[in-house]
Image (cartoon, rainbow, N blue to C red; front, side, top):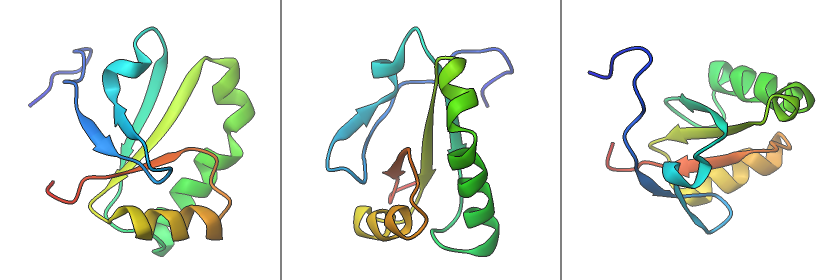
Length: 95
């Protein structure tokens, strides 16, 4: 278990935009790393749209948002397009 205030361990996952994203790529910036169970479900959509709508405030704080779920990249592409999400979604299919 990671303790509060500890640095998150690095990882690399495929993103909806076809890139591989590593947490280390964002050193020096704040990262909102949120995990959700499934694309395009009511609760997950509400959460994602809330983060989408906070873009200006988060950018002012030098903060990047990354969403992670076990859904595949193709599902993330559809979810992102349907709700005009402005941050990358990462596929953690193997948990």
